[in-house]
Every structure is written in structure tokens, then in C-alpha cells.
Length: 203
Image (cartoon, rainbow, N blue to C red; front, side, top):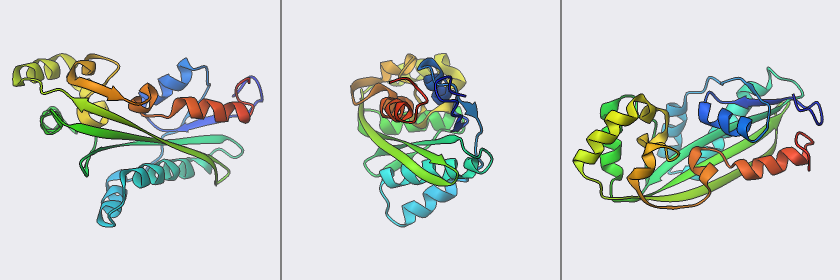
């Protein structure tokens, strides 16, 4: 609960990275992960020819809406991130073999990360923001890839694209354009601005 306004803030996400980002920025949140079949939603949007931005926004809103009914009066934050490489969408890899295949597919190419946050109160969407970052992977060797996967371990399974820019994954890249927090999965600075408007944080 905010010490400024007494307003409860709930994060509708099981992402440890998003939780840590908000906590380090001084936002006290309750955690309530939603039950959303993301694969089914993405398959439906893919069949309709939707853009990654549309999918990211829809999933972020869906997550917040699923949770808001359990927290009347609270600000509920839903979030989602999509990785789009020339029209191909990448998800969190289920195992190291898939992580390796994803990194090989992204090697030497430029891709986009699309991150969305949606805020809902009592079943009504009251704010949203979608930001984008563009990342170019260097043409690393197979030997580097083997070493990276061995050293990074299961951490690569926790992010789309099988990398974590805030750690060892920085070595995968030749160029990153865009906001750092957007790369991590949340348009944090605009969200903090909105929380100030709501009295959750001091102006």
C-alpha cells in the first residue's frame, strides 16, 4: 500500500524482474499472477495477422482484468513483452535446447522488443503505455554460445529471446537502441509518472 495515498497497487505478473524493477524504484506492490493461456491468445492474433504491439497490449490488459476482480479499488498493473524478429515472434524457451535454437535464429540479426503496461481499477482500463526497443545481436561464435549457455544456466529460460541484458547476456549484442527498462519488460518511467498522478508516489 502506498505511504502517500493509501492506494493499493497490485502487479498481475509472476515476473521476478518486473517485481524487482518496481521495488527498486520504491513502489510497494502486491503480487497476484493471473492464469492466462498466452499461447492460445498469441495463436489467435497470429492467425489474424496482428502486430506484436497489439498482442502485447491485449495480453497486458487481459492479465490485469483477470486479477482486478480479486482486488476491489486497487490499481492493478498488467504487463507483457513481445519479441519480434522480421515477423517471427519468440517466447520464453522451455528448455536449454530451445534457448540455443532461439539464439542461433537471432544471431547477427536485429529484432524488436515491445513492452506494454496496462493499469486497471475495478474492471476498467484507466491507463496504458507501449514502448519499443531495437536490439542487434552480434555474429558470435558457436564456442561463445556454448560457453554463454553453460554459464547463464536456467536464467536464460526466464526471458523472451533467451537472454538477460542486465547480466551476461549483454555480451550477445552489438547495439541496443531504446529504453533499458523496456528491454527488461516494463515501460517503467511512464508508469512511475502515472503512479505519481494517482498519488501513489510523491510528485
